[in-house]
Length: 149
Image (cartoon, rainbow, N blue to C red):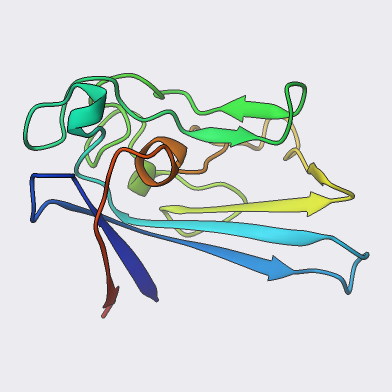
């Protein structure tokens, strides 16, 4: 797999490694798609813009989940909690999965513009993800690609 490495702004070389794959599922219905998140290494949780000291631990930690609208959203347990989502944390992204037998892999289906909720009782913690706080919230990052062995 090709992972992207996202570094803490101003604290190089500290990188999180993850991947997002969007798959067109127009074979099911027009506009349908699947989302897959793969987490390889999560060692920082916030940047200096979020109050973290050099090293990316502390401050306001990442918020992890998905938001498609005010009524269609979910936030992962451990979001905004220092140390919860990093490697070794109680809700470590690399130590759980969803709709997958592979640790660190989270699979979602979007059908008719709505994220399909997994059956109740079969969802391990954490339940849903998108690494919003680290990759998309504008904390400042640098990126480089790596081919995993």
